[in-house]
Image (cartoon, rainbow, N blue to C red; front, side):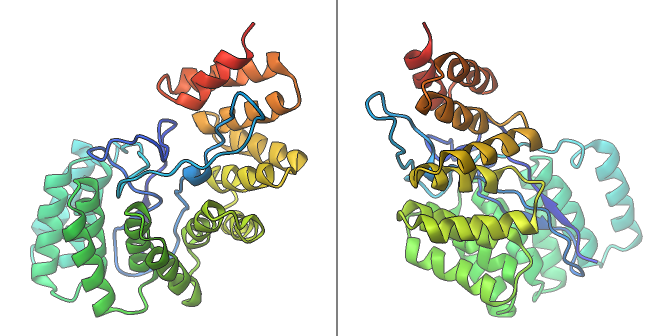
Length: 313
């Protein structure tokens, strides 16, 4: 069985102004073991952040110029001494098992211990040179540490070994998208979808590209597919809601933003997006309250601060 160690995005995550030194990748997961396919969606919908202009309340695009963009929470439980100790005990009993190193490397990665993760993936690959999952996992860690060149090389190697490995296409697509190489990114997400991926991230990320190009009908369709695959993730609701806003469908946008909040009320963008609808409706008091909640969750989130300036008083 393949266990996917996915990251949940933090409320501080967004496309604009992210620090590339942090754990920063749109919707990738560390595959802990080489056998199954139960993946949980972990994505960010910030490609078309709802920035409300003082005049006109227009929707504007907000794209990161660098290869990284979204911050993710660090799952300290995965990197805890107790968990690592149990995985180390497995390795002690099976020191030549590349799967064991891949699993522990994933736990280290989820715990923010990147150097340790890299060492374990290095060992896994040394023991099994064609271990394509470990190459993709190591690529993700390289992305976290800012080594995009090595990340790309590892994604390429993973795909060379297994041209049907959807997770590697999705990871590489995210790397391309963050670097501004939209065509290659789109082709990689498209390839994963053509492989009949059950990973909602492929549809979500392709939707982000459609959205950034103003093709909101296609974006809404992709976000809807992502939602059907992973209905408990708030990110595609935010993404679809923003495309609804762009097409002046406030009722559906409001429903999506409210659902995003219901699923995870710690995401600043969801509250700011809800506030956007209140503001467009002229309900300034309610808008100010939602903007304030967004600013509380992320004091540095500029759309929330701007919204508060417009709606308070």
